[in-house]
Length: 157
Image 1 (tube, rainbow, N blue to C red):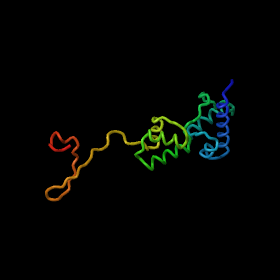
Image 2: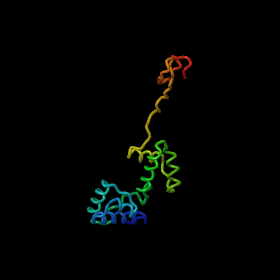
Image 3: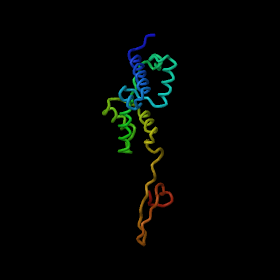
Image 4: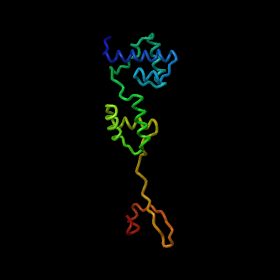
């Protein structure tokens, strides 16, 4: 069967990755050198396919017709570190930053998915209500949440 050159190269790189890991090299190191991100769970599935296909790279073809992986390990690490530095960054801001830094355009949904995987996503829901401090006649400071209190307390917000 004829395959596009990108599919052939990917299958051969996966076979190389499996052989090097089998020889005892670290998975993360080999992934970086080969240029393919493979999780330990995915590695097990690839090893099974590789053995079932008589250790041929053709067995590792996934049917995606050579689509490249957009997010590499170094891109993920950069994204996570950037988000750790500034928790207020939003998905659209991170999309623009990734485009500038790596030249890769991802969707906001994919960025948020990656951040949720490592528990770096922003808190969902409404922000907390503002607290107003008031000084009483005796000089004591009290804190009150007065948002939407205008109905009951004239002169409030």
